[in-house]
Length: 411
Picture 1 (cartoon, one colour):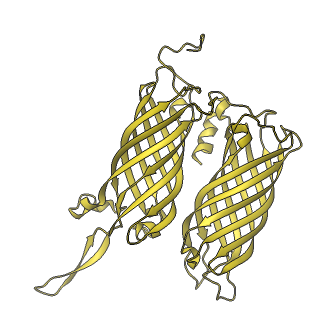
Picture 2 (cartoon, one colour):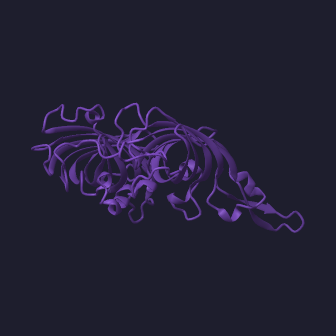
Picture 3 (tube, rainbow, N blue to C red):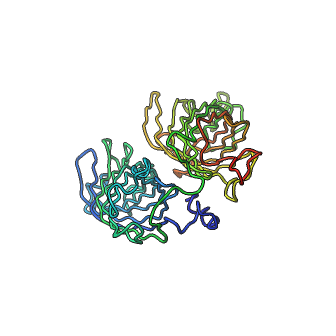
């Protein structure tokens, strides 16, 4: 959503043109809901909006609706339920990654898909309340077009959504498998989808690693932030990352975050031994350990108006998601989302300092209960970290230009 929104304001730049390589897709077909008791059949429809933001990589925002029997409502006369899935999805063109975009000829494309997002089961009167969780997805699309610059693609698509344990009351491995046919319309499509301006040239270029640490607050009840008991909600948060500046605008990183956390505040009764009165006291919940491995799509706002020699700072909002696991007396493996603002300060061709302000949003099953609002969005970990980044190999995309850069000689 962030990438597509900001692209509207950057239409004058070829590398961020909203029209070029942007598409809308509509498809429908069959769905199979797999849970601990077997498989139920249903139907599925999907609509998505996306863009090929790099030569080998497209990003799209997709909405999928699945109509199938609910496992939790299987004893009812009408167990049917509508499941709503909203995902951020990446389509990868492996041939473009290795420089042979049209190895399959002028008419076909094969794209693996990976996605992460939210899942909601609708509610019914006198039934369970809606169930909100995170989900992950793997898929494959096979597209056909009449010629390379055709505005229309016909495609077949298979997607498997991985659902967490206990979703819809099912303890077993839960999945939605969908198979559909559809149509994509492109607003602008060049005959050759070549590398864009300031995009990485070699597969071994523009990589970096980083490591750092900071503090994390394990609660959304900020009114307790300065309580004596509230000090227990602050914990050290180390992190390590690897990533690549795919262009002067787009960066993708993989980061391992988290370590110590606590469940949200609990209400505990306190009895006065003198008069027997009972009062309520709020105390931090049970401590636990966790880790999250998240992939983040980052946009460099500093380069939206063009590259400038000697620029030191990069300001990069980002969105991401990935698996999270809690490994204590109450082990949980799930999917979580995160968003943040990344500040990167140039100190040399091989290094940067960074500060990262992020929020990791987890499900109530991971955090130990719903947030103060009772919503899935009210459970998470605000985090502030600082660290160092080391850059590897050649920077082929002019992610940053030295102060002595000359447009005439290219240095």
